[in-house]
Image 1 (cartoon, rainbow, N blue to C red):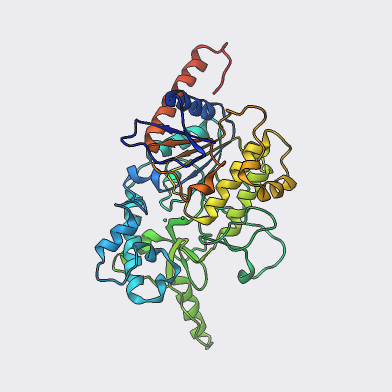
Image 2 (cartoon, rainbow, N blue to C red):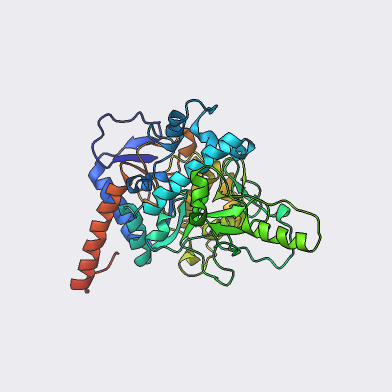
Length: 421
């Protein structure tokens, strides 16, 4: 059962599926959600475009979102929807490539100018208070980095040699490598070889924020895979022309001097994940998810997540959808039975209605969905969330920040009281 809790009185109550119940006392249930966040020790946040709209970044699927805006602005183009410019096939024609590059330039400029919202600042507060295990963001604006969270995808260190063609990846239209036996194909300095959205190889710390769909800040070559900052090539994208890779040009020049045959010079493309293509950092993303699910991460992740907060996403991307469901199962199960790889496989094959409850406390809140609309199809979310908070993510962030402030004051002036924050 999932309780429906509006942050503000809805003008017209939504039509609810059978497993959703209107909370008998919305204020009391909101207080329970706030208390659950304040008392949690290891929170996993999965967030989407809804947390960045107030920063000036348009979402994707609303009436004013990117998909419909692109369609309206390009009526003469053969576009079924603006979504087509986020498909890997966008590079198949010159005109669609031009439109894609110009769209990326616009999004890059918006992202560079954007400031963290109240919800972004809440993420930093959770981290500063030792409560944040991980943020998995579907956004490509990298605003999470601006609010001070460590950001990126760790590299996978494997002593066995392996070709790039055999590297496991994650795609928008399939499942992410969450479980050990399902790691198959799965919603922004010139001349310097840096890994896209990854940490340096010497770093052993898993970033607090994992970008699920890449970042607008980087470009990479479609031939040699070397990465470069987008800002240095923004002018080329403004006019719709992807630049040639400087590394490929340098190597080609050296080959000509040595009298060797010519090779292909690649073009730079944004390091964001499009529909129907593999995620170039998918193996790294999958490894972090696996560790957080199985509670094998060091430090805060040692005991696994105890609260899942899903915010500002319609959960349309299959990989993210599956990841949320698995985290929900893991968190709910962890309070009633030892959580191991065996448990992961057992949970993966069980139905939502048969999943174990968290101990004997039927009213415990451990999974929260915060968005204006409930994800569809609704039947896929039966038994996944304890509460659906309908409302604005920024409003919820402001409420939590106020409560954190109260906790800090109580801790400072009344140290003899039992601390719950």
